[in-house]
Length: 119
Image 1 (tube, rainbow, N blue to C red):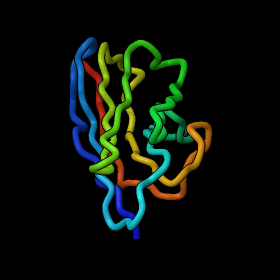
Image 2: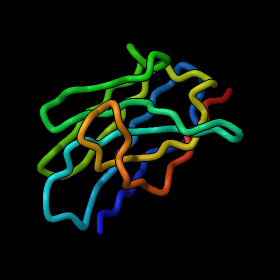
Image 3: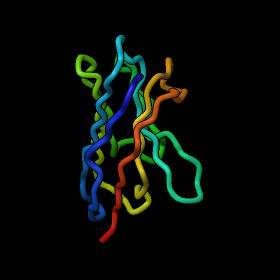
Image 4: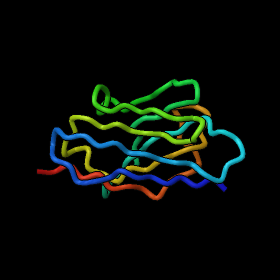
């Protein structure tokens, strides 16, 4: 059974940076696509960024130019570097895995990590 463990969420001021990490365990084969989604109360979960094993990426328009997704496939770990954070980035961020396309969500989810952007 695949498990995803996120870390790195925190309280940060507007304009600041954070780096989220997600480590996958309990798998016998390498995951194809890993990604990050976020959710705020009363809203649907939305894609932030996703990356395939060959490096193909997909970003939400709202984070392009500010966030960068990367992965260490040998370690089954995905990272999200978030720069120039805005209050609208405040959300619970979830790691996702198991999709075969960066335009689809997979079936495996982490427990979530809180990111709060506030002065």
